[in-house]
Structure formats: C-alpha cells, structure tokens
Image (cartoon, rainbow, N blue to C red; front, side, top):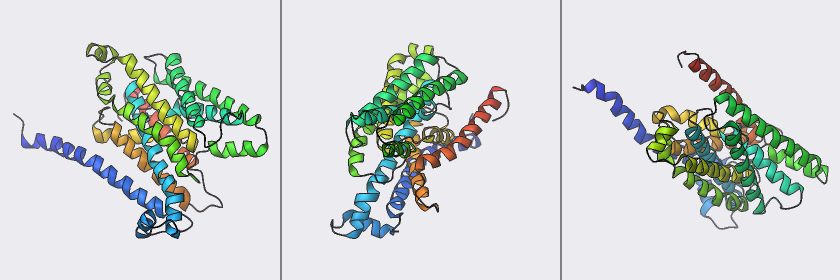
Length: 347
C-alpha cells in the first residue's frame, strides 16, 4: 500500500515537470525583450515595443527592427538549435558529454564556409554559404561515427572529435593563409570567433529555414531516444531502426549547426551546457530533454549576447569567446564528475 508520504515526491516532480517549459518560455521572452533594449542607446521595454510597431521613420523603429530584432531572433534560433542538437547527440550516443562543439561539427562547418568564401564561390550573404557549412557539419559528424564506431567509449569519441576538429582547423588556417588580401583574412578570423553583431534580417532568412527543418527532424525522433536508452539491441527488438535514427540525427545536427555557423561563426558549448542543466529537471528522460534543452540554449545565448554588450570594453566582446570562457570550466567539471562516477564515487 502506497502512503501519502510516498506520493508527495512524485506529485512534486510532476508539478515541476508541468512548470518547466512555461518557466523557460517566460525566461526566453524576458531575455528577448531585454535584448531589444540593450545597446549604445538604452531603451525601456515600452520604447522597445514601440519600435516594433511604429512607423519606419521612427528612430526607435530603426534601432529595434533593423539592428536589434535580427540579433535577438538569431540568438533564440541558434541557441535553441544548439541546445537541441546537444540533447539529440547525447540521446543517440547515450553519453552526457556528447555535444556538436566537442566533435568537430562547428569547426568543419566553419572550414567549409571559409573555403567557399576564400575560393570566391560564394559571398557572406549567399545561399551557398549555409549549404556549404551544412555539408561540412554533416561530413564531420558522419566521420566521427564511422571512425569511433557505434559503441565507442567516451575517450574514443573525444579523440575522434579532436582529430576531426584538428583537420577542420588546419583546413581553415590554410584557407586564411591563402586569402587574397590580409583584410579578408582578418575578417574571416573575427567571424570565426562567433558573433551576432551587425546581423540583418537577410541573415535570419538565410539560417532560419534550415534551423526549423533541423529542429523538426530532431524532435520527431524523441520517442526513439527513450527506447535507445535501453541499448541498441533492445531498441531494435522494440521496432526502432537504429541506422535510420543515426542518419536522422546526423542530418538534423548538420542542418542546424551548419546554418548557425554560416551566419554567426562558431559558438561553442551551448549544446553541452543546456542539456546538462535540464537533465535533472526532466528526471534524465532523453525524450523529454529535447524541448527544455532548446529553450535553455536559447536563454543561454540570449543572456551571453546581452552580457557582451554590457561588459565594459573598448570594443564588443565576441559572444563565441564568452561562451567558450564559461564552457571550458563547465566541461572540465563534467569530466571530473564522470571520472568519479566511473571510479565508483558518489556524484
């Protein structure tokens, strides 16, 4: 017989589950409004709202609609797809340390994009740029799974990811070295640092279709992630086509990461931090982790983009630099936790 005391933790957990997504949505909405008001010209929430709906000749409209709105939309879309991609890769590999940035996807996407620009095949506002970046990300994730194998250990995955990242980095350095002039090389270098500064609605239109397709593809596999947590053999016996799932995740991650890198450069560690923060709140369910991770990723990138605008400096700090500064200690902390777990310690 189950007592009332036994049902209280379960009821409390169910209540938290119902509040998690609305709370994250509210946080993203709040940060979105704050992002519209932060900059050299500070705007109140009322002035930012006025800028969204007022005539084009209104000074607030120029600031909000032309400069800050594209930046905020891209922060939500890119942060969301990076968080979602990280959760999907962790579900596929059944490893909480899996993330696109650790396995070479952003670096390979950046190499493909830089190579097309350096060779003169596309420009920064061409549709060919996200397509090239998507192909680069797809190849990197595919190579990772081929080299490491289906049942790779964490060490083998990280080593394979380092190899893919090093190869992509060498290719990017070569492309910069062969740039037609030093100004082009400098522009590529700053772009690779990751930034949402000076983005327009054209950048939004370039990235958003691919990001939406990637999100739909990854979310459609959520049921399979839960079954896959039992193991590949059990998942196959329960009707999950593991090879098809693997291909869907590779394609979804490549679409999302490639489009993100094409318009914002490399923004690391969002795909690692967001799922890790959300996992205890969804009781480690890989299917229910996807949407909270996407919302947490959007909130993290919005907060980082707000932070780079308010941190005192002679020039804007690149948001990719800030996420890396935060992400590296976080990653090292996770590795230490993983080591204690493998050693039989208490997490």
